Image (cartoon, rainbow, N blue to C red):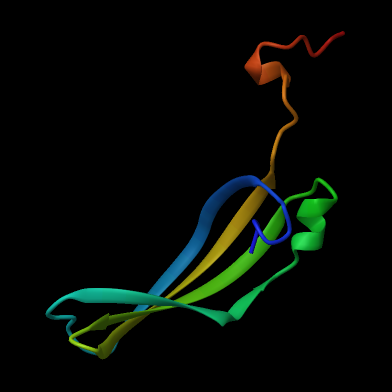
Length: 91
């Protein structure tokens, strides 16, 4: 989603919940439901932090065993040469 819009930033997991419906056995797999993805990346494009919510289904032996829901905060990428990287913020 970020790459499609040519955006970058630091992604932080702010909150998460997992609902288990049955044990996950066998080879585990996960499917991110892009239809459940919500958020406002226009804020990130304007240099402000954005909030994104995403749902992932977890499977074992082709049976759904859990659903993970996460809320992420995306901090905008800092410009090259910011004061943390050795630039002088007072100049």
